[in-house]
Image (tube, rainbow, N blue to C red; front, side, top):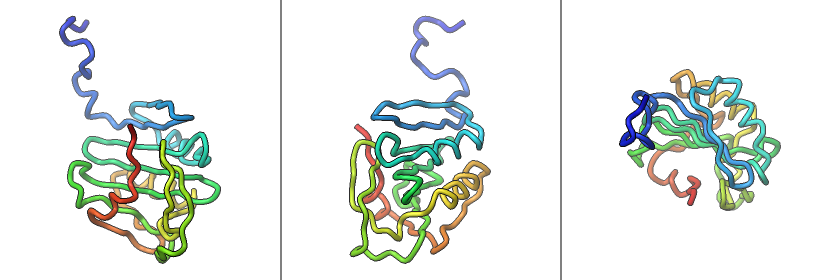
Amino acid sequence: MRRIRDRGLPARGSEERPILQWWVRGKRFEEPNPTLAQVEAKIRALDGRDRTLVILRDRARELDLCGDAATGIIVLRTEDAKDESLWEVPLGAEVDDQDSVEIAMGNVSAPIARGLLVGADEASSIARGFHGGRTVTGSAGTWRGEDVLTVRPWLP
């Protein structure tokens, strides 16, 4: 049993567990210690309207997926969320800033270059790698560095 003054603090060791978060119509849900099947189901449920953001956190590591599984998903990942220079975006094609599409990311929507998007199968493959502690590059390479944060979603 926890002491009264400890209430509201995370249980010992709970911050070490992976956690899956997803949003439906602006409401956040979470699942501690998600299975790979749960992660993939949330990715495939992204619809660009009511379900636009999935986040998988595992200690300092983070994987953010935004968009619509039917038309394109932007995947952002890092091995250390506190180090802005370590963020990456696996690329789905050559990036042309003139060829962009509006992508919903949590509570915001922004034009994103089509080359930054991957399909649902590729996003699932990247998530499987992340879940297994591996890095999977995008079919057209990977964009790295602090500039990646210009397309990262921010939640209020």
